Amino acid sequence: MRFTASLAGLLVCAVIFLANSPEVSAESNNDANKLTSTDVLTLLDKSSLAEKLASKDEKKSSKEVVKYVVSEGDTLASIAKSYETDWKRIFNKNSNISNPNILDPGITIIIPEGSEKLPDRVGDLQVAETQVNVEKTNTQASEQSVNTYSGGNTAGNGYAYGYCTWYAKQKRPDLPNQMGNAISWVSSAQSMGIPTGSKPKVGAIGQRGNHVVYVEKINKDGTITVSDMNYGGWAVVTTRKVAANSHYYIY
Image 1 (tube, rainbow, N blue to C red):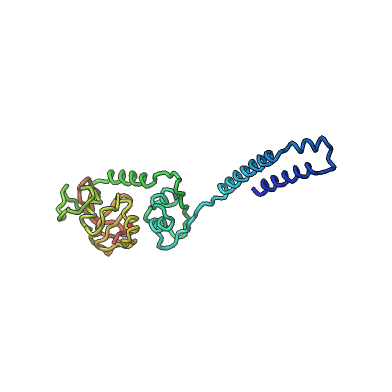
Image 2 (cartoon, rainbow, N blue to C red):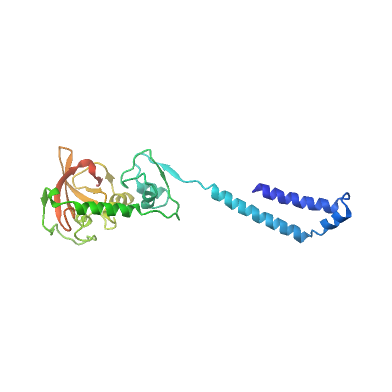
């Protein structure tokens, strides 16, 4: 870039020198005099254009990838807030994150650019989890109710009846209606300042993939008893034991 500007300056100096030098031949002097001030300005304009293009290329090539090393306690929501982006975009960008609710300290993630097009890994994860839930049989539940649920007043529940999110809202009416699909509940809670963590508590909502459950009881054998809807079938409420570390929790 600086080389182009210097070259233009040398060219102008050379023209002036040739035009005024007594040692050049008459023919050469006449040719040099033919280079008018307009010609010199044209050369300078072209040089300036070349310099601008070189500057643009230099900025483009020097654009650095923004990387972040995950620390203890970090969440996709907190990282996204720091970089003024969305947690889903960070998850979609980084294939080394398998669960959007669990970040291993020490891993390096890349912050996506605002205009960057990314694959929908969140959507793919939802589809995969839904397929797994469909394949589950009713025999996996220790108890199972009929397709109705009389859990009290449903006023204020903005989720679709028959799904796990509707049931979780019924059990925890204090939680907002704007938490999205089950897969985004923990991240949404974190962005809203609602406490979350990896240890189960009675009354907490547990999330695993695209499914949420309600913690009914903590057992001495390292399991928890949970209840949920749409695990054994649409609008079906089940109660079963699962490993305590199998979910991430909203308190």
